[in-house]
Length: 67
View 1 (cartoon, helix red, strand yellow):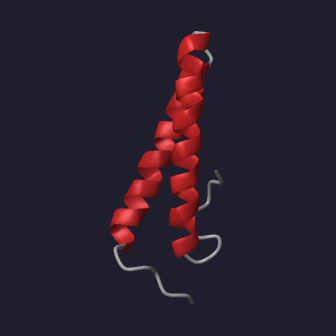
View 2 (cartoon, helix red, strand yellow):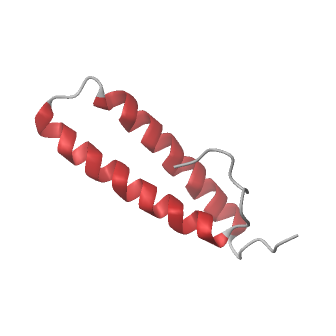
View 3 (cartoon, rainbow, N blue to C red):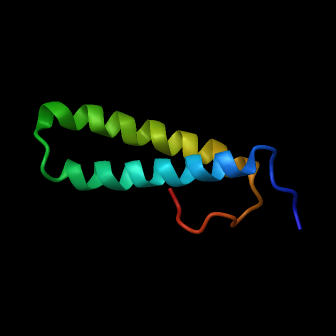
């Protein structure tokens, strides 16, 4: 079994928080006007980038949902 990174609980919590924010923004996107849409898309991309960084620290398949 691969080792978990230092700060495991914090990264795990951060992953879950970012995942929830992405889901929330994706739901909001459906009812948002165009002027706010671009800002939301940028936030979603930023959150997904952070999730990728976190996932690289953990063993493959550690997190079930994919972003």
